[in-house]
Length: 165
Image (cartoon, rainbow, N blue to C red; front, side):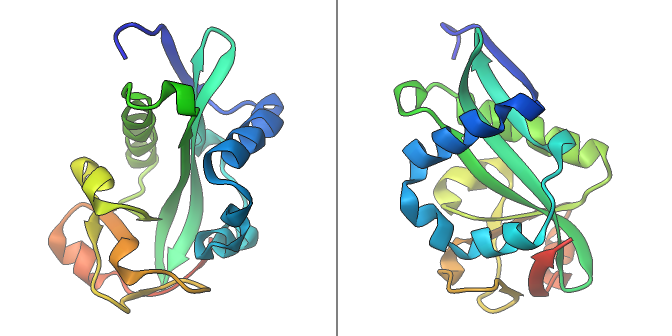
């Protein structure tokens, strides 16, 4: 990332269409069939918790955090995290994650859930949850349900159906 003049900032109202096109390029039409999308349909996006990465005025990445409940626990769902293909492997995704996590913690959130690869997200403190402890509204590989919390005790105590918060 050192060769890029990268700016991280909150998503602006005018960024929505650009972000949607980025998600289309990054994930294709199958993105709407995912269980995480069912949760996002029930929730309201939190612009204060959604960030973009820019090189000059070009949006090269984005991350969204959506308020949810896991059972009775107030939490956030991270995702999608997307980086323009030409800008991947340059630390942009990690920078967006760090920004989103720091802002979530500053706003008092102690649990962030996502569906993704532990090999990537594990570096940022996300850990797999026991199969069946967190239930999404649709099929999902239980090996990909990850949670970041303040402690292992807290991670074990968070259980239930995920719904928009």
